[in-house]
Length: 217
Ligand code: DX5
Ligand code: ZN
Image (tube, rainbow, N blue to C red):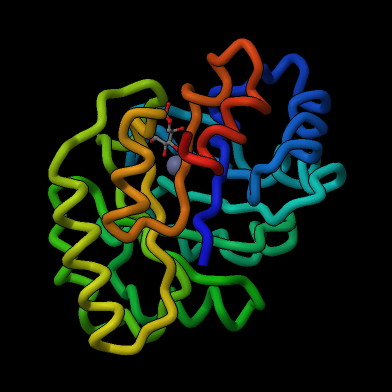
């Protein structure tokens, strides 16, 4: 399977949100990556379901919602109603991960779990068959534009082995510090979905940046 590109709207121009959505609609991007932060799990605060609901009205591609919030289960239904197609919660923010994964799936969404850079992939061993996606954070979550953490490559390889061994259909997504320089190596290691914020939106021609991440040239 060819890899996917999910531009992180965190770095877009929110004063021109409609135009940014149309730009993604007309690009070769696969998903919209939407970062929800609560100021508790991570130091930053971004947006929530009301904004996502508006994005959904114009987005022609699936919404890949990354929840960086504590007790995420309080809001699963709200995000489903707002239009999330993929809902990813953090391993570090969920006490009853197995229950949460199934609650997401029961609402008809694809379920993802994200690991912070310090969390070992083996922590997911007992739920890997239940997952549609594993999001490996390659920076400490909270902000765009940070430097990529190099141990991500070995985590991808280890996770891919686990997925194959358990015959899981989970996709591997990498988020944080993805650039033209490391994207190829990430896909080669086994990454299925590249998230990119600043690499896309700080580029003078974001659609070209997306296409370059797709083609890896
Ligand atoms: C960080 C977010 C990322 C962020 C990535 O906590 O989860 O999705 O937007 O931004 P870049 O690609 O600029 O590192
Ligand atoms: Zn993210």
